[in-house]
Image (cartoon, rainbow, N blue to C red):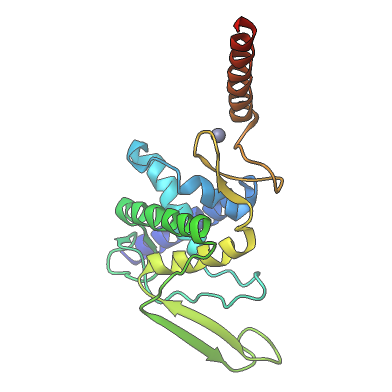
Length: 215
Ligand SMILES: [Zn+2]
């Protein structure tokens, strides 16, 4: 029984490490992964495809002390699916419902950002934790943030990421797919969308010209 739980823990940790690797090796890293995630059709995923994604969502939310200028999040709650029965904080994974909720919420924040140039994200349960030196830094104390439920932890991580990349995330003017612009003036997600618009303009233009010729 104890051995079995130990094995489940080890397996879970391995899956989390692999998920973290998949996120960091996605083109554009974390933000690239996030842009993909919010546009996935969760209902179309097979159970095993969903498990792969569930670990990614869980791993994305994990505390990341590598980011500077940001209060790291300390985990104070778990996802709703328990990998180990009875463990409610660690060894938990999101349900599809939680993931779908996040997709909708984050797209809402993006819409707000595009429409109003600001995206207010409200936290009804937010704790700021101050630590003595030694916990994370030899000389200075640290400030950490804890929030509930787990989806709000995810949103906090998203807020920080968005702040760094807000200027690059935009909807394609042709197909509405959300993409990361490589250049400031990039309006279309890929050359195909750009070509489609260009050829439509050209056809319109040539029609006008031919009409003029008739007169
Ligand atoms: Zn497009």
